[in-house]
Length: 154
Image (tube, rainbow, N blue to C red):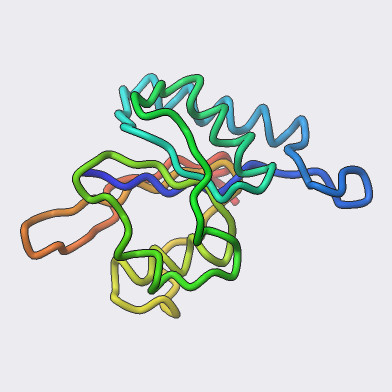
């Protein structure tokens, strides 16, 4: 099974929107990445997001294109500074789940899952980008299988 880790799209500054919803660029970049993922026939069973507006809006865009059977829902424990060591054991490894959240939480989660060390920077996420983690065998070894990022050259 795969675990898709996606950072929320670019958001508006708090001065324009106190809830920091997605900016127009954030919406468009997320749509572009979601279209590419759908074109590659990425299968997502359900989407979990932090509950913050920008993560929810990003998850809704991915849901439009990837149509997870289980839909999209807010999930406790995914806020930017939440403890990844408490969250990781709750991951449903029998499903293809997409997590939509924030930094530093997501990068720390990837470090924990791939290197057993949340302090280890394994992959630098971008807004609207997706990293696919794959459970390779029964030993639960996890690897990065692929990534879709809005800006490859930067």
